[in-house]
Image (cartoon, rainbow, N blue to C red; front, side, top):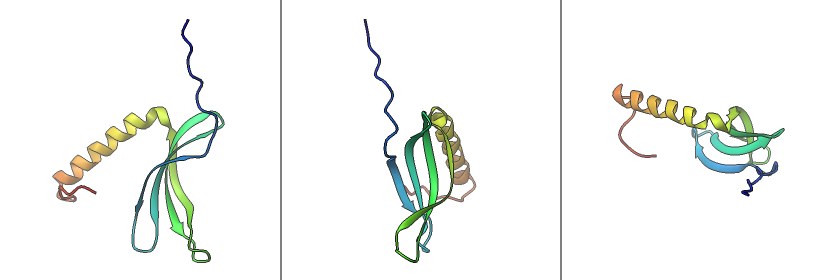
Length: 93
């Protein structure tokens, strides 16, 4: 008899990536999180709060983690097209 591991309980989000969006102190943060039993990928801009200097969440996009391969493929196609149009150099981030 095999046992399957239960999905993780709702815990703190796991930060995957964070990079600066601009020089105003805005950042883009990619996290894996869960809400109401759904595993999610959350891509959100954060702004630097002038009062305390800390990053605070702003607008973003969240979808079920099962759509991550489709989202990743779409971003790969966008990157390729942007390079074809001369919008991106071959530099790596």
